[in-house]
Length: 110
Image (tube, rainbow, N blue to C red; front, top):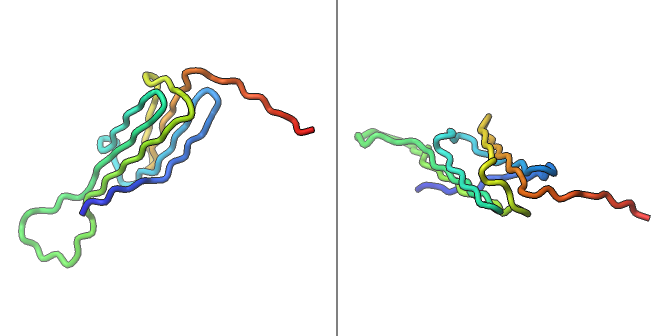
């Protein structure tokens, strides 16, 4: 039975863009599909072992197909055409440039 995982993600606000990191161990870049919208990112993947149809005397078969799905809602709109993706060491990184950079101001407590 295929298992759908919802892996852990980190979303970092770096002022001009967001950096999204998702744990994707065992997946190759060709197994992963990324869809971006103005205010959301959808990541899905499917990978697994294909067993021979031949009669074999398996004692155990645990390396089944696994799938992955995660939708992350973003706090503000991004530039969809400028999103960049990289996969290294089982971690998918997406750089999501913001449409409008909103200034930040630190407030001192009196």
